[in-house]
Image 1 (tube, rainbow, N blue to C red):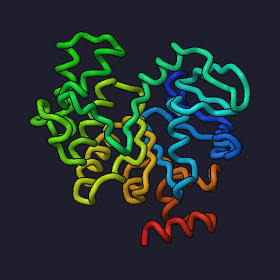
Image 2: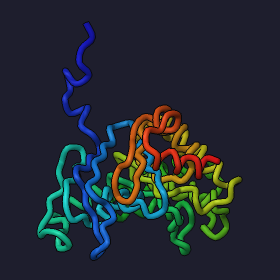
Image 3: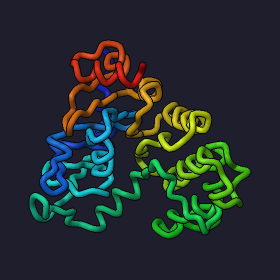
Length: 266
């Protein structure tokens, strides 16, 4: 008889990120209207939907870059503690926020590399200043991650000397150097030309194959179909449909999703 997967280690199945009934507003504009989402360890979750559907806002709420007005956010089973209510609700524990953020590395649409630092310095900066790691150890890891994303030979150049695809790969190496529990990608390829886009997609696919926990906001339906364990389709701040990529893309159940896929995969 097969043992239950969590029989010997119940903590193993605790999701890295869990969102329950999340609401987010900007003044009178309600952007998220009661969203539930789970990112189990080692799974890739893709968020898809039209512009303005709430995808990036949901991702930023996961990382506590945005305050939400209602609902729960749990990191590895630990609930974020809040003070205040509604538009005055904010995280109550700064140390908790820092701990969560350092374990959820974010890769943005715009690369956000520091122009006055070399690529190696960019990758090393956060582990040195935030985690207070040993410089020699950090440099070794940073060079290893630059090699992983295919730009080991660019360690000593300035960001302005790299193509957009190389800069985004440097940003991914910087995120990896924090050795986070999960990677959060906010439209990582949308600022790139198609040729450079493929460089970054190759890296993301390799990370997915390693079993890294990732949440990806993307406009690229092929990427979502290829790397995801679970796809979430957001429409006007609510989850319209979700499921495994084969089901979601192969047999959409709602008219809104069928229309969206027809427009984006034509």
